Length: 401
Image (cartoon, rainbow, N blue to C red; front, side, top):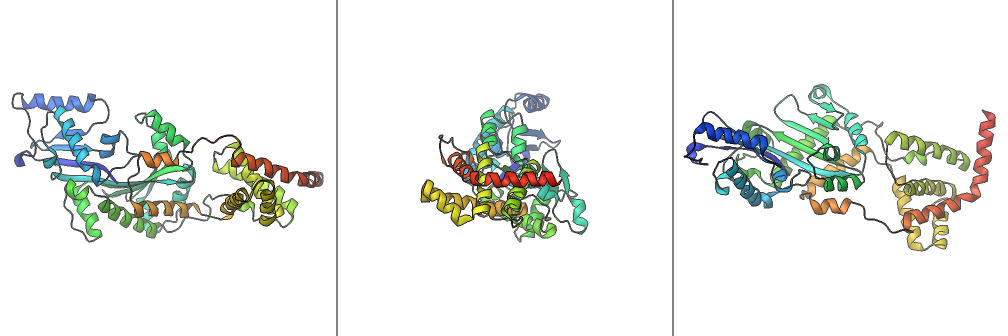
């Protein structure tokens, strides 16, 4: 949505006034003092030599205290009201009607999406993207921050970065928000387009055949943000193509193994162990047991037999749910596909990600005896008849070596 914005207030157009009972130096000293000492998030204010006031502010941080949550056009009146009130502390007197039509010299558009993969996976996927020609020089990677910046040779900057990592590392983010983000499976990623000069704003809009007005009334709009981000993301995909086949994916390789059940079991366990070490995926121990046992059973007994046995022991609903889980594991998906779909869906809906969106992603506490743990026990019981064969096979392998 709309991220950082930069405004210019012209004194000759009477877009603001200042106190007449203090000197210019005292007024400037107060502005500097407020920039350094005001508690909480606040806009950064500068005064140019000609008296023009330069304001740089993030609407989401001003309204919510963080920019994980997003703002849209409906938040514009509240943003202008709060900005007007804060500018009074700088002894800059204006009103929302003046601010909404003041000149915008900078605007950043961004979209936060949730990707059901670790930050390391997504960053590796972006890093492994196939570069073409001189475009490789225009991209910079920052592994520590999980960030990839494109078009960094010019004023325009298009980037992807790990928002989850930023939230957890930033001391200014509220502790409660960090706890919620930490509980979410997968990571939040942000796609951002920064235009730091008015000519860059006009140039980007001209690329999509639009002649923009550099005012908040015009630019503070979800549809404008969507048009700019969509155009840049489409261009990014054209330039960078598809990710290499070495990108991490869900361990579907478990199932593409030898024909013999014993060979399959032995190789499957090895594949699972390698994948867990390589991906750094954090799973609940019950969930690990459930997935490992499920893959082994469906490979050894087959989907139909496993479904029938589980239905007899529990019920048809549980059996159907188990089969759906196993089918998801069987479906190979490249990391780049997940990344692309996440951002495409985010741009398509363009809803403002906020408190409710985060609450839906935070897993609810499960009562004991529910599906995952219960089924893991059933699946392990189904494996018991095959343990002797597996042990005998393992002994033969050890003796041969």
